[in-house]
Length: 86
Image 1 (cartoon, rainbow, N blue to C red):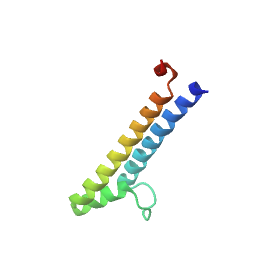
Image 2: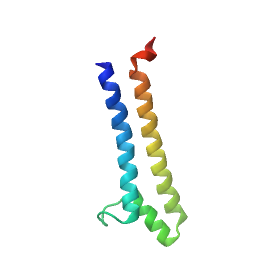
Image 3: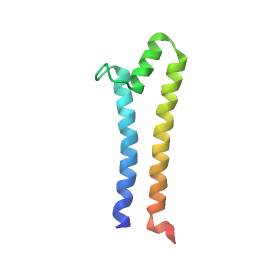
Image 4: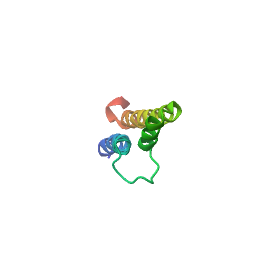
């Protein structure tokens, strides 16, 4: 069972990080509903108004969340890897 759970953890965390990045990218490009709050729309609004606070806040939020999800995925992979328990 540990051999089957490990790839699921890694794929789930990397998949969530990828989904967040894709959604933010599409929202930044203007694809999707306009009334729904998104980090990509905040980036676009900050770019349009030249407000660096909005740009930096949403950019750092995206960066931190994706980095943390990737680190959690790698940590779960290392914790459930039977070869590392020797």
